[in-house]
Every structure is written in C-alpha cells, then in structure tokens.
Amino acid sequence: MAEKNIKGTPTDLTGNAVEEISSNLRRLLADVFTLYVKTKNFHWHMSGRHFRDYHLLLDEQSTQIFAMTDDIAERARKIGGTTIRSISDIARNQRLKDNNKEGVSPQEMIGELCDDNQQLTRALRATHEVCDRHNDVATSCLIENWIDEHELPTRCSSEISGDP
Image 1: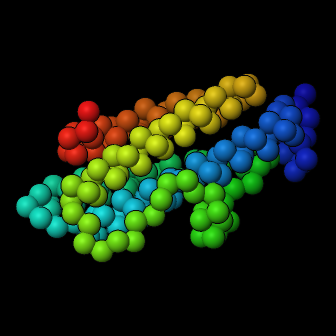
Image 2: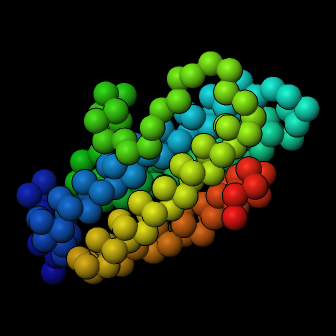
Image 3: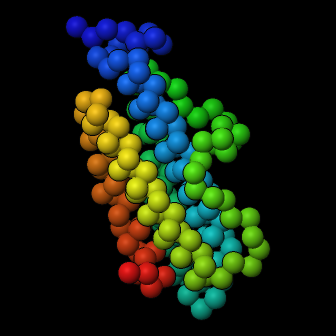
C-alpha cells in the first residue's frame, strides 16, 4: 500500500524523492515557459525574406512547447510536489535567458532558439536521471516522450541556423 507523503498525496516515493523531482520539474516548467515566451516573441517580431516560413514555424513550435506546461505541472502535483505559482516564480526558477533586445535578426533568433532548445533537452535528460535514481518510472516515461517530441524543433532550428 502506498504511504502518504508530507503533502498528504498517496505515493510510494519518499519525501526526499518528491522534493528533488518536483524541484527539477519546477525548473523545467520555468524553462519551458521562458522558451515559449521567447519563441512567441521571435514569432511576433520576425522580419525578412523568410518571414512567412519562419513566422509559421515559430508559431507551430510555440504551440508544441506550450503543450508541455500542463503535463509538467500536473506531474509535480500528482507526486505531491508543488509547482510554479506566478511570473516571479518562473523568473526565480528559469535557467534559460530572456531576450528583450530590439532589432534581433532572423538568423540570431533562430540560432538562439536552437541553443535554448538544446539546453532544454539537456535539462530534460538531467531530470530523467533524477527520476531514474528515485525509481519514478511514470515521470521518466513522460520525460522520454517530451525529449522525443522536442527533438524536431531542435533539429529544425539547427538546420535553419546552420549549426551542426
């Protein structure tokens, strides 16, 4: 029978496991929100001869990124952890950098998104390792799916930016 963790949620994970996993999920969620806003920012401010293609690509990517948010937050709650509560909470937990510059070229936008997508994939893999260490198979499985889904936007950005 599952015991209840310190928040009263039935789970077979230890209190330390819940705290470490949910802490990692909070940082992931903050990064996903940051990447979402940056992708929309670049979508809104795109210009140049590839405007239509990039504009549509970034809109599609932002939709895929945003789709991850609820699953990440819900997973943290299912195991008895806490999640993001506000914009300032996102700012405290995010590892990806904001971009508030004006006049960013399309190549700079795509290159920065490529770097951020790769950084997010590394963070997903690191969180997967934490989940594996605590035998949280369900969260590990979700992360594997997010990595798989996230590799296409990373590849698209990389191909466009010319990065290997």
